[in-house]
Length: 304
Figure 1 (cartoon, one colour):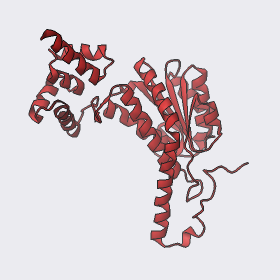
Figure 2 (cartoon, rainbow, N blue to C red; figure 1 turned 45 degrees about the vertical axis):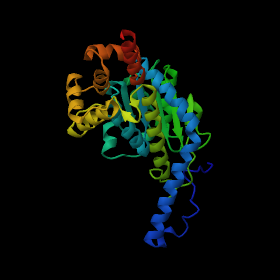
Figure 3 (tube, rainbow, N blue to C red; figure 1 turned 30 degrees about the vertical axis):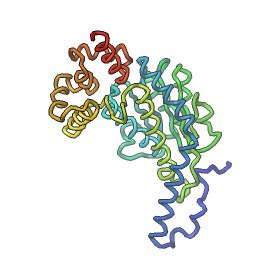
Figure 4 (cartoon, rainbow, N blue to C red; figure 1 turned 120 degrees about the vertical axis):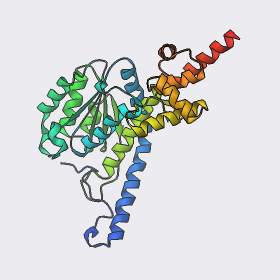
């Protein structure tokens, strides 16, 4: 079997165990920086993938993540934060991780070879035409991830593969391949380190650009967040205040009138007659705030 980059020995690894602690940590930190740099080369493919995901979600489809081991944890972290950060409905997101719920306690290695479990997970999630599945694997050969992408594609879903080895099975199977060609790990094969870091960055970029396409970001503010705790309610008020130029108390009052919807509160401040009227404007503009604000300004001009 040909050795892959994710299993190769790092150039600074010789004698690692007898180096000074500070030297070891410098090597580990430098390796993380190099891994992060690898994401830049994948920007074009990440951009294509975000457009595909946004298209699926805006048309009523769902987004599924499939992975095992450390890659599964990276997928889990990204997927679980989408509802709170960008207001994407939880029932539109599926997380398929090898080993199921037990993986959150043990992260055993065996389930990553279980292709039947992958097929069952894809079927149970109802992944099909109109949906999109992202499969992750550092090696690009993990049986669970490869089978998940095969089945999703066969069922008519758009597929995105993220892997750290060139020409791997996962990338060949995917409609859109995202290669994160990270250097060998300082601890050979420990892909929770550099490869995992690159995957985390790529997923953050991918989901954030998707949210921007969907209109969930305005001037760097998360205008579609779900304010379900004190911190987020305060953040929502600060966002409304920043975008509208109103004071914090007035922004909080507008949020109450909008039922906690940031975009609606902003449109009320801009002159929308009611929360219902603001919602209709958003529906006409694809739930994008900037054209909705322009529509209100246009209406003001026509009445002048």
